[in-house]
Image 1 (cartoon, rainbow, N blue to C red):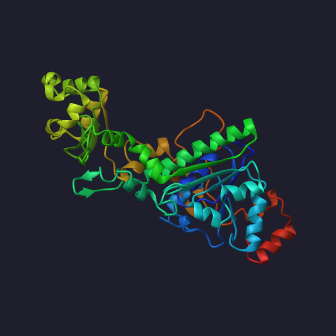
Image 2 (spheres, rainbow, N blue to C red):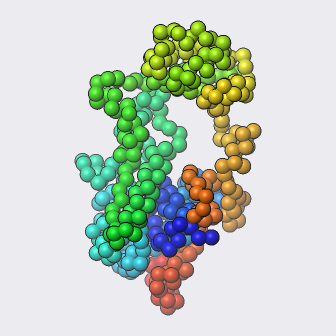
Image 3 (cartoon, helix red, strand yellow):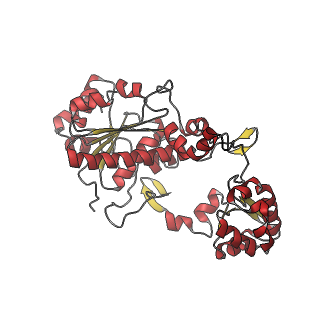
Length: 392
């Protein structure tokens, strides 16, 4: 099946999430994506192992649809192979600091000297400018320096998100930039350097709160699971479990008041606007908690859902993959992996009516080395020589 990026060649030097997941999204659209990996494998291949070969869950999520080439990128022979690959590629993806890009010969000026119209997509922790540009970082760093961790949890006890929202959001931003650069190249013939950073992404997510702080309008402090901007918006404990409910806007607030039999609250001056409801959210949360305390979680969600009030159960991972909502069947695809049981992988977050290719498994280490080298112009004798000297 042909995707909308059929014919686009991508070299993926990315590691962990931000770079590799972006490359995976391009593969989902039909690009020929080659993951370039050291002969012994990269650390991100083996985090959270779930297969017989030791591949980890993070690797499986971020590397579907790719081919894998092993390459010693530090040897003279390996550098020459890199140059030959880059000369025939359209997009290069790498998530390193500016200094790291130069160290591996993946900075934009070096790539442009090899291929004038190359598109380089680079993701870093702190961006390419400023005193922290050469520092490395993972998802939690982005959460921490943007104010997100400070505002999460209870006062004097901050919490970071258990998942990696900044890594994945950075990856989506990088993909957005790459697709824009591809369109630009089609129109003008020019390549581009697409840049994204964990901190820049995280600041984008906290920007509304930062506006309040910078203008002196509001100084936010942690408020647990309760929203300080509207209400009632909190986690609530039913008789047999937890659920979340978010009341935002006057119409929804009126519906909530009627649903729980408290229409008197509609005219209460403490709750006249979203902000006032946020300011007095503890009172609203207490009212809601009293309403749901003797009901089951499912009963609460059924009543609130029928009233068009946003709500949902707080599910454990076990409930997500095997619970009554059937999320695994609806949102995941079972992907076969050699010598292992099928793994449930969630496809790309946006679906197209056409132009994507079927989700396929991530590659084994070096699985496509010979095939990739052949496609990029190496004959059998040259490939044998590269294997003999340990370049691939």
